[in-house]
Image (cartoon, rainbow, N blue to C red):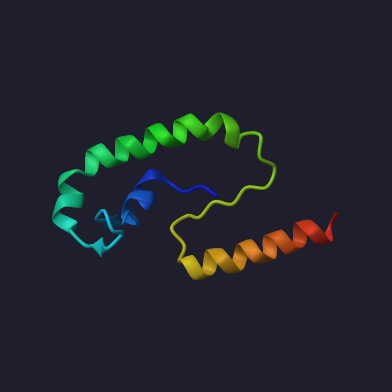
Amino acid sequence: MQDSKEHIFERLVFSDEEDNIFHDEFYKEQHRDYYLQDIHEDTVYVRRIFKKIGNKYFVNNRPVEQVVDELIVMIQNIYMNK
């Protein structure tokens, strides 16, 4: 699965040491450039590996439920065509 760095940034969730989720949009926006750069570096790092993967799915900021449904269909089609 892959998506744009902006879409990944939009889905960022912050939590404390005990995994309690908290929402701080001000902090998130204040550090936007840092997080976008970090996401970019991660995607560049895995790009080489990702090229070797045959079955790809681009999230394109779809809702989680839609992604899951489409991935299930994709996986079923892969196994049915083997």
